[in-house]
Length: 210
Image (cartoon, rainbow, N blue to C red; front, side, top):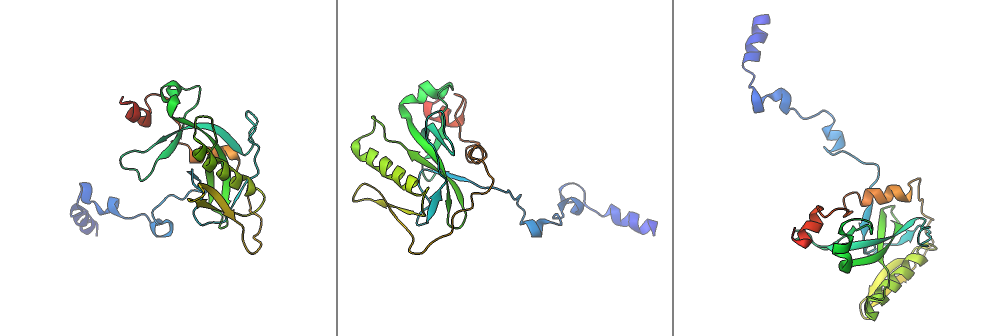
């Protein structure tokens, strides 16, 4: 018996074709091969399309924000991206002066769709540097977000009017379950790789030609 086992072991390929090392893990079928996380949060400048949503009540007072954040963002689109993405630039960080002319003031609020999908909504705020038409889009989007703190709404872009309208549901929808997640936790998940705090940041280097 010992000789047979030894002979069999000698025939087992070594290196990259070793079947012992190539076997799939036993739990792959149950997990789908992915590492599941407990929380996923999407950050976007646009609300989920064609979805009724609610926004967590917030206080946007500067320095006293609760369930929201006033930030400066740099909008950037890489060659392989479908659309632009917003990156936060702290006013105390080195890239601030280099990117200052391209920064926009944004209020980030926490929202949820009817089916429970969580998102952070990036609301550009009206500023003196924007034209009247752009500010109207920003103002009406903010109106939608504030209304969504009270009732379910479905924001709709009015291209002819140049702003946002909203619809309310025909039937009553249960109040959202906001759960135990804090705004700082949601914020960290959504922006963990989207803060430009150094001139060495890849997005900063690409834009400045570094």
